[in-house]
Length: 202
Image 1 (cartoon, rainbow, N blue to C red):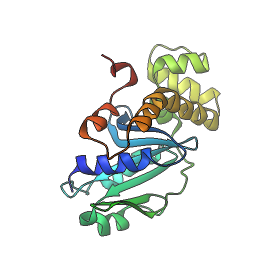
Image 2: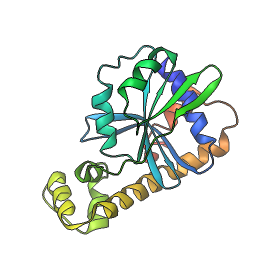
Image 3: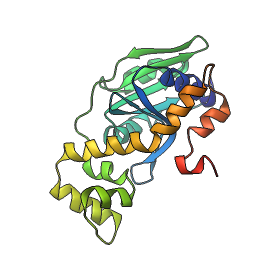
Image 4: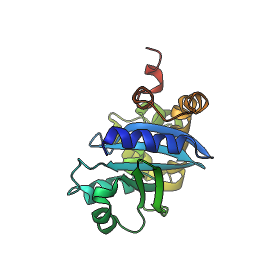
């Protein structure tokens, strides 16, 4: 199964779940070095999804998942049958697994909450304007701003603000897509859910 097809199936599955406030594709994080294939917000928690299609390599999966663990509350690998056996061995028990097939999406392993997130990575995932507004701290560079905030604010407070930022930024377009979608997502829908909200009408 190709990545685009997995995205369509997984995205539709997430949109139709009760309690899902955000579904967004291609979310850049970890200082621009990583891109989560899908993120979602469910019951106030932010979840990252790494897709592994039949055409993807999995030799870097461990490294990728370590990056996900530094930011997200829960992490899942979404795959088809080709890599399933290897992914079960590579992914730690706290990482959940979804299997995509022509019959739909099935959760094989439930993710466990990750509590040892990286504060600097979490702060970097928010725009500098958000950091200045929320924490009232201004420094010359974004990294200096993140470091200063990390020294003066508790990790859980930072995490709470990050969760709120994601829901506020992407919640409206997700709500619109949920109300408009009755059948499986199209590739255009996937593209729309990968655009920053202020670009949707441009």
